[in-house]
Image 1 (cartoon, rainbow, N blue to C red):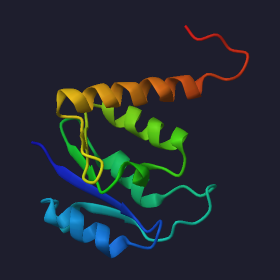
Image 2 (cartoon, rainbow, N blue to C red; image 1 turned 180 degrees about the vertical axis):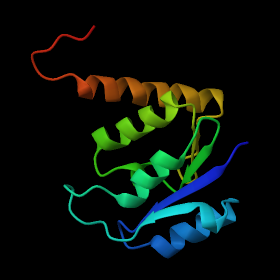
Image 3 (tube, one colour; image 1 turned 45 degrees about the vertical axis):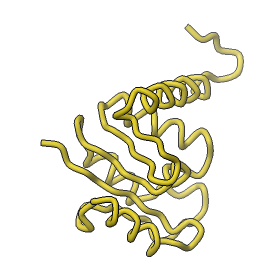
Length: 127
């Protein structure tokens, strides 16, 4: 059974607006995970971690924008790679990214490859 999940974070202070957009896109408010305090970059976001542990293959994760999935390019690409590898569809409302489409799968593959490149430490060879 496919479950549609949402994620919103207060980065930028527009949590209520994101919640409204996710709900308008058909996400059940009870299935929206949130992080209300952006905090420092060293802190893990409990809402995002809960979403990632709850989501299963076949589920759909909806965010307002791709940058909500991380605080850096590396974190965003790693999160997209994780979702893609686990068979979880990602929909970004403002960016138009939907990994259920052929174009979305190509974009996700590029982001997954970038995450793999970022994982290679200086001096290591990529296999």
